[in-house]
Picture (tube, one colour):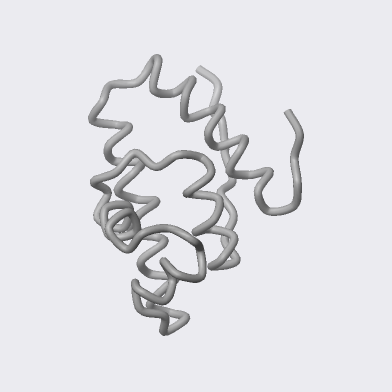
Length: 98
């Protein structure tokens, strides 16, 4: 894999999330997506940016952003990277052994 700056974390996230989805129940995956959406919403509000502005800055549709914030979407790595980079956010993955 090739990693570039902050986006390296989202690429790692996508890889591990794919592995996780293959072994984890759907309910756990849904909870992870809800948590990611919640963190995006909290950061956006902290920065006092409305959804329309963030969507425009990140180059995604407002409907996509709204669904992600609600945890109702399964965004592509590209879309999630755009939003996280715009907000100055990273995702760090911690893998726990058995």
